[in-house]
View 1 (cartoon, rainbow, N blue to C red):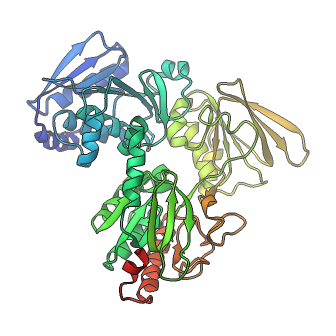
View 2 (view 1 turned 30 degrees about the vertical axis):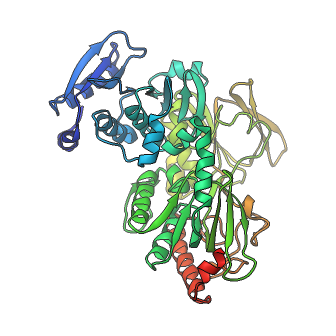
View 3 (view 1 turned 120 degrees about the vertical axis):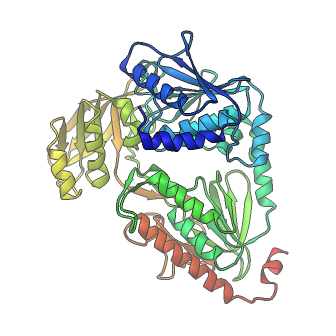
Length: 528
């Protein structure tokens, strides 16, 4: 199952086990069960601290449970955790075996104080780049608290469960048999949802922080670059965002980041975070900004307010909130979001195996999505509003070579239809004739561009009609001391490498602004 280089690497990791662990495998007679059995046997052979036991009373098969032999800490994989989830497997082995997870001490104590039983189930797909964060977070919590159980379930392997629970997007988390949350979450977000008082305590702690010289709002490529450049100048630098990496985390293949021929979004996001953490940068995640209150005069403190109630202050601010997928804004889209309407083909595509799906949008993202889905779905229909596709010619050639894909031009989506629980059809209008049309299907993947995350800035800085932050060549906004970079600005070409460069420019511009302010006690005076 595992090749020799992987075995050698895993054997090295397993020397960090502090406790014996048992792999309890529940198998059936399927081909996947044989693969799982081979995987379990390969792992067992790599360490004297690991034993294997076949069981017949497991709730799912095929599945295997990683249990600390002398106690109750355990996690379960109802999956063959390869691909994106192989790291989740390695971490689970180590953490159940006593190797401490990389979680701050305060959070560890908070997790250990949670009262159970808390039985988590995460439905995921092996091609989902968002799922490992959730799986790894819940596995780490289960390793720290015996009252917490976690099972990671491959939706493609347990299609009947997916259908019965009407799961149409991943990651999807259940707690004690009831829906708990969906989408990417880290340990802090999960614990905050379980311990409602933790969010307010966190907000109080953030509000008590001393003012920054530069505070970066947004932790994607632009924000990360700005943080590195300003921290290298030796000024008090903070970066705050909902998640480190931003939309890069939702990007699968990246092949145009110069000097890196090929990588994946989560890997690049992890590298960005590692680089930022190598400097003295105050990093805060899990916070959504809701308002910017500019300083009354140059050199004063700008104020950022957050959904949690936290308030942070800084002499200069760099706005890098990024963008999100553009919605179709048609009847039925919101009602059937995550019930057939999806925005990430890599994450949710496996849930639509052998089903009929549509892709909205004929740019590179849309055509790439249609190509990917063609290998899973029984039928893929791509709808483009214009009379030509905008994707690169090489992608179009591949698209038109696929036998289960059809392309409809001049199609204006008018409604998403469903039966109350899931999508059943997509209505559109033929633009030249005005004739209404309908496609019966089970899934719709929307790939029609981006919308800047700037709704909270309309009263603070100048924005275009499309909501983009207006910046000059130095990344300055309409307000002195406030700069901006990345996909949320008027800078053309929404590319990762462009955002990174613009973030560096914004960081340098913020520093240049600060050194031209009155120096003597300016920050202390502004804080009073």
